Amino acid sequence: MRIFGLLTVLLCGGLLIYHTADFPAWGDPASPASTHLSPYYIEHSIDDTMVPNLVTAVLADYRSYDTMFETVVVFAAGIACFFLLRAAKSKTPESMLYRHIPTGITLRIEKGSKTPPDSADFERIDSVWVPYDLIIKITCRLLVPFIQLFALYVVAHGHHSPGGGFQGGVIFGAALILFALTHNLSNSLKRINEKTSALFAASGVLVYAGTGILCLLLGANFLDYSALAPLLGGDPKMAHSHGILIVEIGVAIAVMAVMVWIYYNLASRGRHDEGL
Amino acid sequence: MDGLFDFIVSKYNYWGYVVLMMIGMYAMIVKKNLVKKIIGMNIFQTAIILFYVSIGAKRDATLPIIAHGHGDAHHAVHAVDYMNPLPHVLMLTAIVVAVATLGVALALTIKIYKQYNTLEEDEINARLRGR
Image (tube, rainbow over all chains, first blue to last red; front, side, top):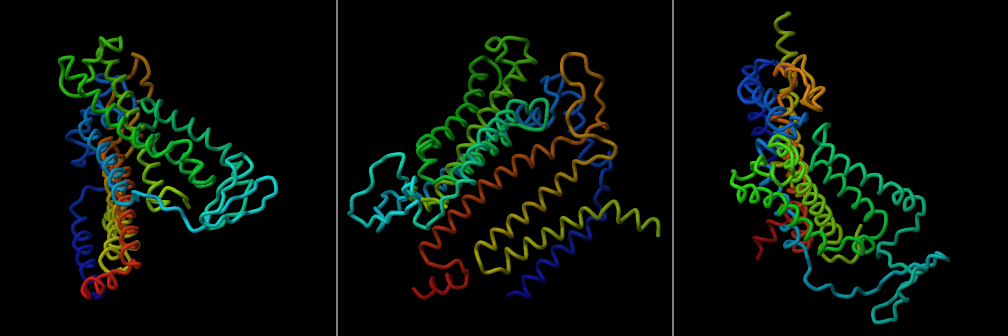
């Protein structure tokens, strides 16, 4: 089996390497990929959409159908993780660990015993015992708001600099996952619970598709943002720019929520009681 | 000799991606552990992504953001001055979808581990045949 696999891989790679001789040279301005469609995008997109970042313009305007269904794919992945892993009923564990924060003492509560009162002095910790690490907690608590702010900047400034909905959404999701890693999963579930993340994921897709339908209702093609000009103010070209911003925000919300949702399900194996 | 050197310089990036792709494919075909197969799939995806991004490269061109594009007064835009934005767009979405599919793949492996208590493919197959 091993030899057979190795032979297949070598044959495949050998054929590909042999045929790279026919490929255009690296960085060749006259290569087929750079001569048909992309010159149009480069030369016309700023006149069509007023967006200097060509990647954003192509992503959310010329190819906005593609991007809409990519967002749907991301949403579908979140749904798939939910249906694969989520345990319908969470059974009470054999024992739970609580930490008394002022003294640092860890308490093991057996099943059926009385649990400590719900106060700031006690916190539930994961059954794989984790030491109380003040440095990591405080550092990440300080870092998380700035990462989130940077994510918002990446979303909002995607027109003029590298960025956009996918990147900003992933950064925002990473900030929330960092919080869930350094604090407990239950702590982060208290802030963004499963229902909220599912709702955000769906509403992100809704913002995107809704913008398209709104254009349709205003008498233009699906996702033709120039129809939004009477609503947003400004001329049709600026409406393209604003429309791109709206759908990018939708993408960012969907991607952020799906990342967090997938993390919740993967980290707790669908039980949502204790994470990594 | 000069021609051979030019040939290598203009093609060696593709060879790198083919080698990466071979590593990923070998892991997907030969490795028995499901997590290793998923890692192989991700290496494969990385090779494809690098291949596309290198297609977008253009000599003496800058990144695809129009310089001084703010406001109305901007210079005439020439296609040779900017890289091809299309592969960047395609790979941008591909990366995020790759992360999402990775999540689904890991969810499936967790499910398989719950069912069979192992991630080795041959053990799972033996268990399936034994039933």
